[in-house]
Length: 479
Image 1 (cartoon, rainbow, N blue to C red):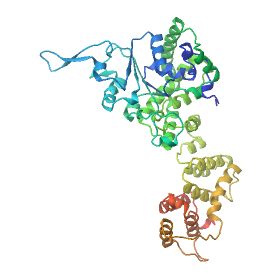
Image 2 (image 1 turned 90 degrees about the vertical axis):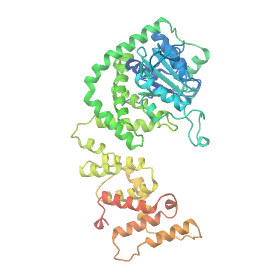
Image 3 (image 1 turned 30 degrees about the horizontal axis):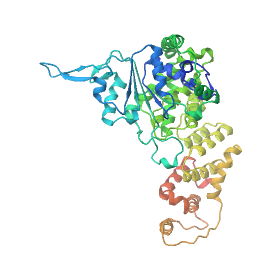
């Protein structure tokens, strides 16, 4: 498994030859987008060279480019002057110097500041290379750029905020196979900062142009070969990754799943062209997932650790045979059910420990952690020798529920008193013959009062606790 981060690899290359500092980790993404002629969206603060990069790439490719500020343009700026044709009900367009008809490369800057009505008109250009229903025969590349949209609670978030930058329509952003956050000043190395400030850059004339055109063509040639070679593995990896994204509430469309597969192949082809034998498939898959999610353009994009964790699990699943027991466990999306399946398949204690630790770490609800930990503790306390890293979190939670204690709490009129009265009406009375499960349920509700039940619905939490007890086969004989 590679441990390189995007900022640590590929020192030099396409972007540096074009005089753009600190973007070398994005070279495979840019070449893949050019080779497949796929729409690409750049996301970053002002002054991070988004526009400069696009202008220099278009010049290096020798393509006719139109640069539009999407916050300012009108539809006529794109199509020219519409005039009715004589003796017909159709319009013809009188082209102007800035019209899109002869463009080979279009760049929509500030697309997140574009009026909604005009944003809809950009949609067919990005997706279909059409405008006003007319095919743009010369158009090859459709790229765009935006500032990160501001979160709803901007006062609680650290960083650059752009109050005029709005999230793109989900259908529009889903037409961009590559959604690429670009480096800001803090993410540049000291050497890159010095080069940027000094204006130092390599000769970007004929050498850069010849190299870029050659690399894009070689990437195009390699893509079909890789598709044939990796088809079976590719479907396994992408299906697993999209399922795991869904579990993490990063919901993707079927179109996005298809795009991820195509992008992964293109990125790997680009890395082979740029890096030769050093290009490993696993890191290409990581890049495809990192720079291929529409949520990158949202107010709160997914964190890198989240994406890496999803990638690594998908990679592990795709690397195992269909009949492998561990694969059967990993393909189950519910982390609690994974533990049960692994136990049923008689996997060893180390594997169970790993799954327990994962389940407790990914569960975001404190009340679910409490009930789940108690269920796991009761189920495994006498028949599994789990690692300390697994026992520690579940024992801490389970202790709150299982340890007998007396708590005295003064109540005053208000929300807590009303809550207690509601719970007290439900509480079963106990004696020496009270069933074990009744005692567990009673303890669960009491140990959560009042803090948890001021944040969570105690009745819904109780139903989830009962479901977890059933899942781990906890019954009256589990004392």
